[in-house]
Image (cartoon, rainbow, N blue to C red):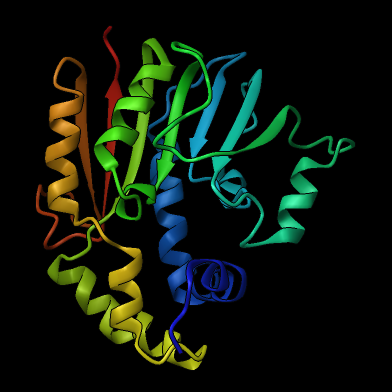
Length: 232
């Protein structure tokens, strides 16, 4: 089975990426990102590649934000039930949440609109990651934050996990050629992305956090979280 993007996200993503051991691993990236955010009352937050709002399960509700915008080219496709619950007008737990249908290469908001921009694994998938980084910096305010989660594909430890866990599960879900589908989905390697981040945010304060072993090697870790404090 060759899986197009819409089919993958509507039929396979939730079972593959948000359940079982694989889901636990992805939730670690969510938690690592949120652990690096400096929060304050009334923040304006933009999440790039928000999908159906899966990351919101890990976002602290205190202090209260002013607004939280999830941007995605296909909002709600991966988990329609979760998406509908988040945008429900009578939802008391997660107020002031909206979703915007758009590409992260062309963010439809004015300069200096947000205090925080977060991204969970999006950069591995986009055609123009450098443009996404530039757009993220454009819409965040001076002294604002950009926090980015990156899987360490194609690192050695990452490949081991995929071979032992991810690929067998993909085959169980009916995806006959998991390596091909991953090649189609994860088009940007982590090493190149880190170099683009260093260049695009060269005027800003950058910190790189590696997991689970903390030393600065994407080959022998599973995730990298980048924290950028923007100085315009």
